[in-house]
Length: 360
Ligand SMILES: *Cc1c(COP(=O)(O)O)cnc(C)c1O
Image (cartoon, rainbow, N blue to C red; front, side, top):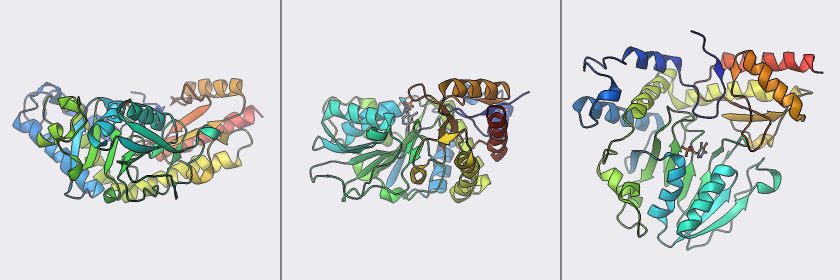
């Protein structure tokens, strides 16, 4: 068995311990005589799996009792529509556009109402987080929307925007469980799990319960109404059973690792190794403003497209996979999620040093 160092932005690396456990349970989950893939989502065994997953997530994130946890399908992209459908009572909301995912959410909201761009960092290819201390938020806005960690560009909010009392909705797909968060500061926190939590196929949404009502936009499909999902504990229809089971294992792994405080410490240490090298390198350069650097997604370039391509190819041959930047921005990107071991980053930096010498 040869595992590579997988720097994919998503679907992404998972903890080996989790994969091994899943393999052991593949044919017979805890004496049930079947795989979790084969069991009814209405069975007692599965009910324990989903309930335990929710409880472990609640413990990890200290989720207050007045927030519901939903396990949904459709990816983060479908949730872009669910936010306005469920929250646009006045049909008006503010969006901060810090990258492609924020922009897509903003464009989707425009289908349903008056989505207003409150700030944007498009002027400098989304290489920074705009000043959000005094945004043109108006009283009639139903919420303020952010993408908290910008997977493609590698920026992250280090401070939440001043929403002037409005509800904050955050897409945390690529920073989910990477550090502690104060859930009470948000109305809705959601993310696709395939970046930092589990396999593709599930969105986890943490929603303040007063937002879960029958008062949704006309024409909202039953499945996309949060109340439908909440009333049925995410079991209105067949949920992504196996994905939720793996997420549950990752939650247990995170607890064992010491929880989110500890993960933050590890993630900061891990990211620093790479950023410190980028800051001293004569060949490689980070592409975003230092103060806004993501702990999870680290884009960098050599400044020469051919050399970038050579680097990606040689890195792949040496066992470092998926370092090519997003197809829309080029260059390189190392996604160093929770499950990327620190040695992965150390070895990558060693390899980059060697490449720099050979190509000086
Ligand atoms: C990947 C990603 C998305 C899109 O996720 P899908 O599940 O593919 O729809 C949205 N937002 C962010 C921040 C992402 O990283």
